[in-house]
Image 1 (cartoon, rainbow, N blue to C red):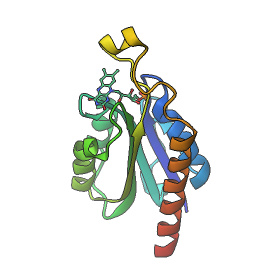
Image 2 (image 1 turned 90 degrees about the vertical axis):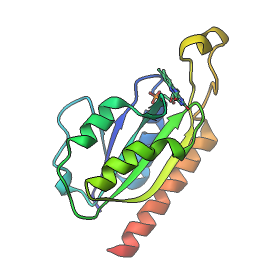
Image 3 (image 1 turned 180 degrees about the vertical axis):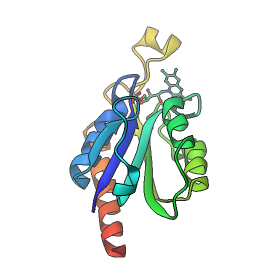
Image 4 (image 1 turned 30 degrees about the vertical axis):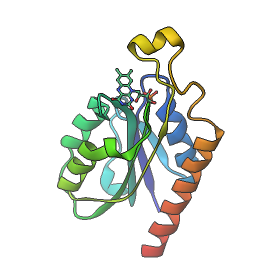
Amino acid sequence: MRTLIIYMSVHHQNTLRVATVMAEELAAELVAVDQAPSPPLADYDLIGFGSGIFFGNHHKTLLAFVEALPAVTGKQAFIFSTSGVGRTRDHALLRNVLVERGYSILDEFSCKGWDSWGPLKLVGGINRGRPDAEDLEAARVFARGLKARIQGTT
Ligand SMILES: Cc1cc2nc3c(=O)[nH]c(=O)nc-3n(C[C@H](O)[C@H](O)[C@H](O)COP(=O)(O)O)c2cc1C
């Protein structure tokens, strides 16, 4: 199973830490969406998309990347994020665009991440230390679940 993880992590590298654990567990290639052109997505059986949440949605660079993707038929994907609140409800826009492009979303993961935006900076931010060891273990278990599900279908 070939897996690619495409991420954007700009605030405190919170999402990168989660993506790294998932990549280890899935033996996935990890690519920042704003760096070198990503490899052809057609080469992969499973593709993960993740970033922090900014004003209620994934990072705009990741959203723009996904909006420009060609249509596929049922390619397996997963979505993840870190955020101040840590909820998958904020995945709606990215999820909708991926589904419109023909991706099949296997599962979604979110956890809290250190957030020191704007006035929060004055108090050192919220969720300092997140993602923590427990969050990273949850990310690992999530990735293991994906692997089991995808191997069950191939
Ligand atoms: C400009 C800005 C806007 C943000 N908006 C939200 C938001 O709407 N909801 C939320 O839960 N967290 C929000 N956050 C917190 C980030 O999602 C959180 O810190 C995330 O872990 C950052 O991920 P990164 O370090 O991988 O970039 C915001 C942070 C910044 C800097």
